Amino acid sequence: MASLASVAAAAIAAPATETAALSVSDLRKTYAGTAVVAGLSFAVEPGTCFGLLGPNGAGKTTTLRLCLGLTAPDSGRIVLNGHAIPADAQPARARVGVVPQFDNLDPDFTCSENLLVFGRYFGLADADIRARIPSLLDFASLGSKADARLSTLSGGMKRRLTLARALINDPDVVFLDEPTTGLDPQARHLIWERLKQLKSAGKTLILTTHFMDEAERLCDTLIVIDHGRKIADGSPRQLIAEHIEPQVIEVYDEAGGDLPAFVDAARPLAERVETSGETAFFYCREPHPLLDRLAGAHGLRYVHRASNLEDVFIKLTGRELRD
Image (cartoon, rainbow, N blue to C red; front, side, top):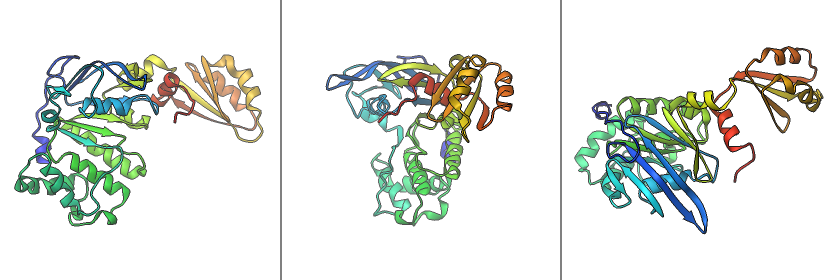
Protein backbone atom coordinates (compact mmCIF):
# COMPACT_ATOMS: atom_id res chain seq x y z
CA MET A 1 0.00 0.00 0.00
CA ALA A 2 1.62 3.25 -1.14
CA SER A 3 0.73 5.34 1.93
CA LEU A 4 2.24 2.69 4.22
CA ALA A 5 5.45 2.31 2.24
CA SER A 6 6.11 6.04 2.44
CA VAL A 7 6.13 6.20 6.23
CA ALA A 8 9.57 7.11 7.57
CA ALA A 9 10.92 5.40 10.71
CA ALA A 10 11.36 7.70 13.72
CA ALA A 11 14.32 7.79 16.10
CA ILE A 12 14.81 5.18 18.82
CA ALA A 13 14.51 6.49 22.38
CA ALA A 14 14.69 5.55 26.05
CA PRO A 15 11.92 6.11 28.62
CA ALA A 16 10.78 9.66 29.34
CA THR A 17 12.17 11.12 26.10
CA GLU A 18 10.05 12.87 23.52
CA THR A 19 11.35 10.83 20.57
CA ALA A 20 9.96 7.46 21.72
CA ALA A 21 6.78 6.38 20.01
CA LEU A 22 5.41 5.80 23.51
CA SER A 23 7.13 6.25 26.85
CA VAL A 24 5.60 5.51 30.24
CA SER A 25 7.23 6.35 33.56
CA ASP A 26 6.03 5.22 37.01
CA LEU A 27 2.40 5.00 35.88
CA ARG A 28 -0.17 4.38 38.63
CA LYS A 29 -3.94 3.94 38.76
CA THR A 30 -6.07 2.77 41.68
CA TYR A 31 -9.73 1.79 41.74
CA ALA A 32 -11.59 1.32 45.03
CA GLY A 33 -8.36 1.03 46.93
CA THR A 34 -6.88 -1.59 44.58
CA ALA A 35 -3.77 -0.74 42.56
CA VAL A 36 -4.67 -1.74 38.99
CA VAL A 37 -1.51 -0.18 37.52
CA ALA A 38 1.30 -0.01 40.06
CA GLY A 39 4.38 1.88 38.88
CA LEU A 40 4.70 0.72 35.27
CA SER A 41 7.61 2.07 33.22
CA PHE A 42 8.49 1.13 29.65
CA ALA A 43 9.39 2.64 26.28
CA VAL A 44 8.39 1.61 22.76
CA GLU A 45 10.88 2.17 19.95
CA PRO A 46 9.44 3.55 16.72
CA GLY A 47 8.92 1.00 13.95
CA THR A 48 8.77 -1.98 16.30
CA CYS A 49 6.10 -4.27 17.67
CA PHE A 50 5.79 -4.04 21.45
CA GLY A 51 3.82 -6.63 23.40
CA LEU A 52 1.90 -6.10 26.63
CA LEU A 53 1.18 -9.53 28.12
CA GLY A 54 -0.53 -10.61 31.31
CA PRO A 55 -3.36 -12.77 32.66
CA ASN A 56 -6.92 -11.51 33.01
CA GLY A 57 -7.06 -8.69 35.51
CA ALA A 58 -3.35 -7.89 35.23
CA GLY A 59 -4.00 -4.27 34.19
CA LYS A 60 -3.45 -4.47 30.41
CA THR A 61 -6.67 -2.77 29.31
CA THR A 62 -6.34 -0.05 31.94
CA THR A 63 -2.78 0.58 30.78
CA LEU A 64 -3.94 0.97 27.17
CA ARG A 65 -6.71 3.36 28.21
CA LEU A 66 -4.22 5.42 30.20
CA CYS A 67 -1.81 5.57 27.25
CA LEU A 68 -4.60 6.73 24.92
CA GLY A 69 -5.80 9.40 27.34
CA LEU A 70 -9.17 7.72 27.85
CA THR A 71 -8.53 7.34 31.59
CA ALA A 72 -6.66 9.80 33.79
CA PRO A 73 -3.73 8.36 35.79
CA ASP A 74 -3.29 8.96 39.50
CA SER A 75 0.37 9.71 38.83
CA GLY A 76 3.14 9.07 36.36
CA ARG A 77 4.17 10.37 32.95
CA ILE A 78 2.98 9.28 29.50
CA VAL A 79 4.31 10.64 26.21
CA LEU A 80 2.63 9.40 23.02
CA ASN A 81 3.86 10.64 19.64
CA GLY A 82 5.70 13.44 21.44
CA HIS A 83 2.55 14.60 23.27
CA ALA A 84 1.98 14.49 27.02
CA ILE A 85 -1.01 12.35 27.95
CA PRO A 86 -3.73 13.07 28.98
CA ALA A 87 -3.19 16.83 28.54
CA ASP A 88 -2.53 16.59 24.79
CA ALA A 89 -4.42 13.38 24.08
CA GLN A 90 -6.44 14.76 21.17
CA PRO A 91 -3.50 15.76 18.93
CA ALA A 92 -1.68 12.56 19.91
CA ARG A 93 -4.62 10.37 18.88
CA ALA A 94 -4.78 12.11 15.50
CA ARG A 95 -1.72 10.01 14.58
CA VAL A 96 -2.89 6.82 16.29
CA GLY A 97 -4.97 3.86 15.10
CA VAL A 98 -6.84 1.53 17.44
CA VAL A 99 -8.06 -2.03 16.85
CA PRO A 100 -10.32 -2.71 19.85
CA GLN A 101 -10.77 -6.11 21.41
CA PHE A 102 -14.35 -6.32 20.13
CA ASP A 103 -15.37 -5.08 16.69
CA ASN A 104 -17.54 -1.96 16.83
CA LEU A 105 -18.24 -1.50 13.14
CA ASP A 106 -21.52 0.13 12.12
CA PRO A 107 -23.89 -2.57 10.82
CA ASP A 108 -25.94 0.00 8.87
CA PHE A 109 -23.02 0.85 6.58
CA THR A 110 -21.15 -0.97 3.86
CA CYS A 111 -17.43 -1.66 4.20
CA SER A 112 -16.55 1.51 2.29
CA GLU A 113 -19.03 3.59 4.27
CA ASN A 114 -17.56 2.39 7.55
CA LEU A 115 -14.18 3.67 6.44
CA LEU A 116 -15.59 6.92 5.08
CA VAL A 117 -17.50 7.83 8.23
CA PHE A 118 -14.60 6.90 10.49
CA GLY A 119 -12.19 9.02 8.46
CA ARG A 120 -14.40 12.05 8.99
CA TYR A 121 -13.77 11.79 12.74
CA PHE A 122 -10.18 12.78 12.00
CA GLY A 123 -11.25 15.81 9.97
CA LEU A 124 -10.17 14.24 6.69
CA ALA A 125 -11.77 15.47 3.49
CA ASP A 126 -14.14 13.01 1.82
CA ALA A 127 -12.07 13.09 -1.37
CA ASP A 128 -8.93 12.10 0.55
CA ILE A 129 -10.74 9.32 2.38
CA ARG A 130 -12.27 7.92 -0.80
CA ALA A 131 -8.83 7.90 -2.39
CA ARG A 132 -7.49 5.76 0.47
CA ILE A 133 -10.36 3.29 0.69
CA PRO A 134 -9.44 0.99 -2.26
CA SER A 135 -5.86 0.45 -1.05
CA LEU A 136 -7.02 -0.15 2.53
CA LEU A 137 -9.61 -2.70 1.43
CA ASP A 138 -7.00 -4.42 -0.74
CA PHE A 139 -4.61 -4.44 2.22
CA ALA A 140 -7.32 -6.20 4.26
CA SER A 141 -8.06 -8.65 1.39
CA LEU A 142 -11.52 -7.10 1.08
CA GLY A 143 -11.12 -5.46 -2.32
CA SER A 144 -14.27 -7.15 -3.65
CA LYS A 145 -16.34 -6.23 -0.57
CA ALA A 146 -16.45 -2.44 -0.87
CA ASP A 147 -20.25 -2.36 -1.16
CA ALA A 148 -20.95 -5.36 1.06
CA ARG A 149 -23.06 -5.03 4.21
CA LEU A 150 -21.57 -6.25 7.47
CA SER A 151 -24.22 -8.94 7.77
CA THR A 152 -22.66 -10.71 4.79
CA LEU A 153 -19.13 -10.75 6.23
CA SER A 154 -17.49 -13.53 8.21
CA GLY A 155 -15.88 -12.87 11.57
CA GLY A 156 -12.46 -12.83 9.97
CA MET A 157 -13.58 -10.31 7.35
CA LYS A 158 -14.99 -8.01 10.03
CA ARG A 159 -11.73 -8.22 11.95
CA ARG A 160 -9.75 -7.30 8.84
CA LEU A 161 -12.13 -4.41 8.17
CA THR A 162 -11.54 -3.16 11.71
CA LEU A 163 -7.80 -3.23 11.01
CA ALA A 164 -8.30 -1.32 7.76
CA ARG A 165 -10.43 1.25 9.59
CA ALA A 166 -7.64 1.77 12.15
CA LEU A 167 -5.34 2.81 9.28
CA ILE A 168 -7.67 5.37 7.68
CA ASN A 169 -5.71 8.30 9.17
CA ASP A 170 -2.32 6.79 8.18
CA PRO A 171 -1.28 6.53 11.86
CA ASP A 172 2.24 6.37 13.20
CA VAL A 173 1.23 4.10 16.11
CA VAL A 174 -1.37 1.31 16.03
CA PHE A 175 -2.79 -0.14 19.26
CA LEU A 176 -4.08 -3.70 18.83
CA ASP A 177 -6.09 -5.21 21.69
CA GLU A 178 -6.21 -9.00 21.14
CA PRO A 179 -6.58 -8.60 17.36
CA THR A 180 -7.00 -12.29 16.48
CA THR A 181 -9.21 -13.58 19.30
CA GLY A 182 -11.95 -15.85 17.94
CA LEU A 183 -10.44 -16.22 14.47
CA ASP A 184 -9.66 -19.44 12.64
CA PRO A 185 -6.01 -20.27 11.86
CA GLN A 186 -6.21 -18.98 8.27
CA ALA A 187 -7.55 -15.59 9.38
CA ARG A 188 -4.98 -15.35 12.16
CA HIS A 189 -2.11 -15.99 9.76
CA LEU A 190 -3.41 -13.39 7.32
CA ILE A 191 -3.61 -10.73 10.05
CA TRP A 192 -0.11 -11.67 11.23
CA GLU A 193 1.16 -11.16 7.69
CA ARG A 194 -0.53 -7.76 7.46
CA LEU A 195 0.87 -6.66 10.84
CA LYS A 196 4.37 -7.61 9.71
CA GLN A 197 3.83 -5.48 6.59
CA LEU A 198 2.81 -2.54 8.75
CA LYS A 199 5.93 -2.87 10.85
CA SER A 200 8.09 -3.11 7.74
CA ALA A 201 6.50 0.14 6.55
CA GLY A 202 7.63 1.89 9.73
CA LYS A 203 4.48 1.68 11.82
CA THR A 204 4.80 1.15 15.57
CA LEU A 205 2.56 -1.65 16.85
CA ILE A 206 1.46 -2.00 20.47
CA LEU A 207 -0.10 -5.41 20.96
CA THR A 208 -1.98 -7.17 23.73
CA THR A 209 -2.71 -10.85 23.22
CA HIS A 210 -3.42 -14.07 25.05
CA PHE A 211 -1.80 -16.08 22.25
CA MET A 212 1.83 -16.55 23.22
CA ASP A 213 2.73 -17.85 19.75
CA GLU A 214 1.37 -14.59 18.36
CA ALA A 215 3.57 -12.53 20.67
CA GLU A 216 6.57 -14.74 19.90
CA ARG A 217 6.05 -14.27 16.14
CA LEU A 218 5.33 -10.53 16.10
CA CYS A 219 6.93 -8.78 19.06
CA ASP A 220 10.42 -7.30 19.01
CA THR A 221 10.17 -6.58 22.73
CA LEU A 222 7.48 -7.17 25.33
CA ILE A 223 6.68 -6.85 29.00
CA VAL A 224 4.76 -9.26 31.20
CA ILE A 225 2.62 -7.61 33.85
CA ASP A 226 0.66 -9.05 36.76
CA HIS A 227 -1.33 -7.22 39.41
CA GLY A 228 -0.39 -3.99 37.67
CA ARG A 229 3.37 -4.52 37.99
CA LYS A 230 6.01 -5.37 35.42
CA ILE A 231 7.49 -8.77 36.23
CA ALA A 232 9.62 -9.35 33.12
CA ASP A 233 10.71 -7.60 29.94
CA GLY A 234 12.86 -8.24 26.89
CA SER A 235 12.64 -9.91 23.50
CA PRO A 236 10.78 -13.25 23.29
CA ARG A 237 14.03 -15.16 22.83
CA GLN A 238 15.68 -13.34 25.74
CA LEU A 239 12.78 -14.16 28.06
CA ILE A 240 12.84 -17.83 27.06
CA ALA A 241 16.60 -18.03 27.59
CA GLU A 242 16.51 -16.23 30.93
CA HIS A 243 13.45 -17.75 32.58
CA ILE A 244 12.93 -21.30 31.37
CA GLU A 245 14.81 -24.53 30.74
CA PRO A 246 15.40 -25.16 27.01
CA GLN A 247 13.53 -28.48 26.69
CA VAL A 248 10.03 -29.52 27.79
CA ILE A 249 8.54 -33.01 27.90
CA GLU A 250 4.79 -33.16 28.47
CA VAL A 251 3.60 -36.53 29.81
CA TYR A 252 -0.05 -37.58 29.69
CA ASP A 253 -1.79 -40.49 31.41
CA GLU A 254 -3.41 -42.12 28.39
CA ALA A 255 -4.45 -45.59 29.60
CA GLY A 256 -3.96 -46.16 33.30
CA GLY A 257 -0.24 -45.51 33.21
CA ASP A 258 -0.09 -44.27 36.84
CA LEU A 259 1.23 -40.80 36.09
CA PRO A 260 1.80 -39.84 39.78
CA ALA A 261 4.09 -42.83 40.28
CA PHE A 262 6.02 -41.98 37.10
CA VAL A 263 6.42 -38.35 38.20
CA ASP A 264 7.79 -39.42 41.60
CA ALA A 265 10.28 -41.80 40.00
CA ALA A 266 11.36 -39.49 37.14
CA ARG A 267 11.49 -36.20 39.02
CA PRO A 268 15.31 -36.34 39.50
CA LEU A 269 15.73 -36.49 35.70
CA ALA A 270 14.43 -32.92 35.22
CA GLU A 271 15.37 -29.55 36.63
CA ARG A 272 11.73 -28.77 37.37
CA VAL A 273 8.39 -30.60 37.22
CA GLU A 274 4.88 -29.13 37.21
CA THR A 275 1.57 -30.99 37.08
CA SER A 276 -1.75 -29.71 35.80
CA GLY A 277 -4.69 -32.09 35.73
CA GLU A 278 -3.65 -35.24 33.87
CA THR A 279 -0.46 -33.71 32.48
CA ALA A 280 3.03 -33.46 33.92
CA PHE A 281 5.52 -30.95 32.52
CA PHE A 282 9.19 -31.89 32.83
CA TYR A 283 11.54 -28.95 32.22
CA CYS A 284 14.99 -30.22 31.24
CA ARG A 285 18.38 -29.19 30.01
CA GLU A 286 19.26 -32.76 29.05
CA PRO A 287 16.09 -34.63 28.00
CA HIS A 288 17.55 -37.99 26.92
CA PRO A 289 17.49 -39.78 30.31
CA LEU A 290 13.82 -38.94 30.71
CA LEU A 291 13.05 -39.97 27.13
CA ASP A 292 14.78 -43.29 27.78
CA ARG A 293 12.63 -43.78 30.89
CA LEU A 294 9.47 -42.98 28.91
CA ALA A 295 10.38 -45.52 26.23
CA GLY A 296 9.77 -48.25 28.77
CA ALA A 297 6.68 -46.74 30.37
CA HIS A 298 3.23 -48.19 29.65
CA GLY A 299 -0.02 -46.25 29.38
CA LEU A 300 1.72 -42.88 29.09
CA ARG A 301 1.95 -40.60 26.07
CA TYR A 302 4.39 -37.74 25.74
CA VAL A 303 5.36 -34.74 23.61
CA HIS A 304 8.95 -33.51 23.48
CA ARG A 305 9.39 -29.91 22.37
CA ALA A 306 11.52 -26.80 22.77
CA SER A 307 10.43 -24.35 25.43
CA ASN A 308 8.44 -21.34 24.28
CA LEU A 309 7.00 -18.05 25.48
CA GLU A 310 3.92 -19.75 26.92
CA ASP A 311 6.15 -21.72 29.29
CA VAL A 312 7.69 -18.45 30.46
CA PHE A 313 4.27 -16.86 30.89
CA ILE A 314 2.97 -19.79 32.94
CA LYS A 315 6.07 -19.86 35.14
CA LEU A 316 5.81 -16.13 35.86
CA THR A 317 2.05 -15.85 36.35
CA GLY A 318 1.03 -19.36 37.47
CA ARG A 319 -1.33 -22.00 36.11
CA GLU A 320 -4.38 -21.04 38.14
CA LEU A 321 -7.43 -19.78 36.26
CA ARG A 322 -7.95 -16.00 36.20
CA ASP A 323 -11.46 -14.54 35.82
